[in-house]
Length: 258
Ligand code: CAA
Image 1 (tube, rainbow, N blue to C red):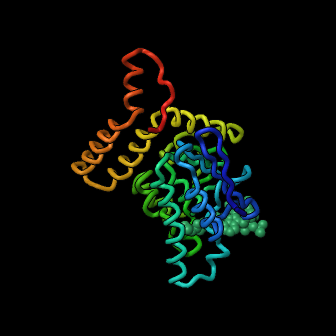
Image 2: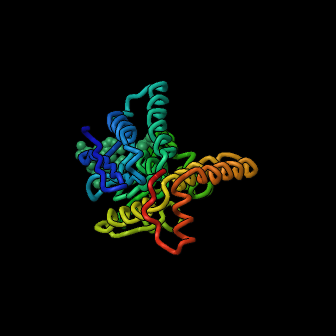
Image 3: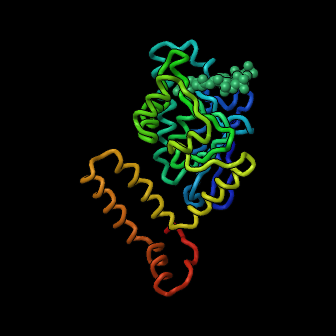
């Protein structure tokens, strides 16, 4: 891999977009490598992922403007689909993905963070969808996910006016869950990922699926999705261990993902 690295630390996998000369901008090769890295995650031994960018300045500064500059209408649509397919894979990935946003998260950078389950960021992070200033729309999900996360009015303001926001504002509007000094960001991301990993993996996965799928349907259908998820847990060894541990007043002896 030229632009993406993967490290395994216990149950946690760390995916790093590593193209610092271009502030980790997403060209076709980077998108293909992200796709490949996610395809290769061992879901038996991994319970949460962290996605971050290399360096201390930028998470991802967007889709690659050089590559996009000469695209035709058809090629533009295909490039949008390429990014959208990868980001949808992240969004629907069976285990939680935490974006550790360590600097600029502009355009495709803001968009890839929004395809993750949870965003935390460093104090120097900057979020925004500057596309209309380049003569294009957000193309990797920004028009859809930003409104769902921060609300329609704020999303429209940010997108129409190409307004970038700093970490404190991103926290205030709920785009990120927490802001940390740069030096503490990865440690806090790992702490959260490890906390998730200690819980019953089958239940955590079922929660992710139920939350995601439930948001796309009406409440009558959504609660049925939850009922199915809830019921499915009762076929797991981890449910029996979790409840027996409580009843026997002891600690869980480590969930087995079974
Ligand atoms: N694409 C390609 N290259 C990029 C890039 C991008 N999105 N962002 C930064 N780079 C490159 C720069 O061209 C520069 O390369 P050279 O050294 O070879 O000139 C290098 O990264 C460093 O960037 P700067 O010198 O510009 O660094 P800076 O500190 O002065 O500014 C910045 C940082 C404000 C992030 C600025 O680089 C910037 O505005 N980048 C573009 C941000 C942007 O518009 N992103 C949205 C792209 S469109 C999109 O993403 C569409 C979509 O939804 C799919």
